[in-house]
Image (cartoon, rainbow, N blue to C red; front, side, top):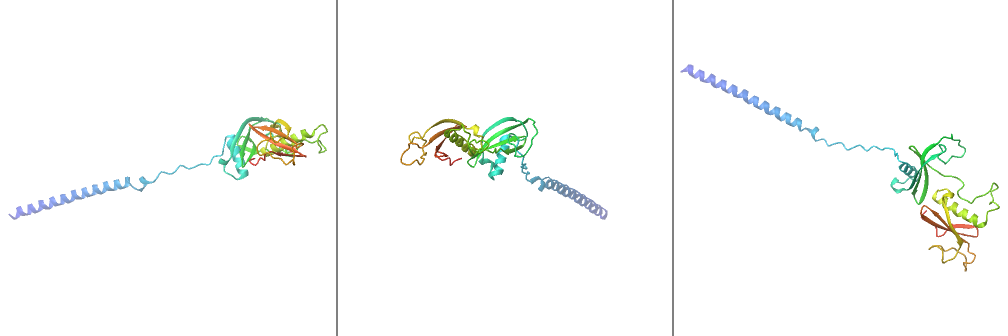
Length: 240
């Protein structure tokens, strides 16, 4: 009887030991599974995707380069600059048709563009070659043609001089060559034919009140009034 009891106790102990081993194995497996699950779903899996890096690239198109040049000059956003025209040209030298005073340039054909943009009520002639652009400002566009002594040529009539003044004035406002401005008509001033807003001060009578000079550029007509040596836009070009 005692022997059977001992055998029963031993068997019971063996079963208990096996059960404990199995339990430990189950617990270990469960812990391993939890560890793998936590590792797979750890913080690294929930890291937000990095936002794409904005890379500032230099403009490559002639109009973009011209706008950047004018924007830098006026300290205004590029969005406030309007493109007027782009013209591909082969310039005779690296000055792009706008030589600096006192500078010498090799005579080599330089491909580029002439870009006209508008900003801040003005127009700018920008010459572009490659990725570089510069504003073209030619001297001698603010007055009528003169001879070497600074006087008007002898064969220049008063009306011709007034036309020269009007073209030079408009060219300076639009930052163009005077030769780019076309003269459409010249006629004596009469109140009935003047543009709205053109009210020159000619005293009590319009007789002998000078001339109206019609100019044209880029699809737009401009009128100037010339009288007593003065030539002015009529009406005033406040928007240019």
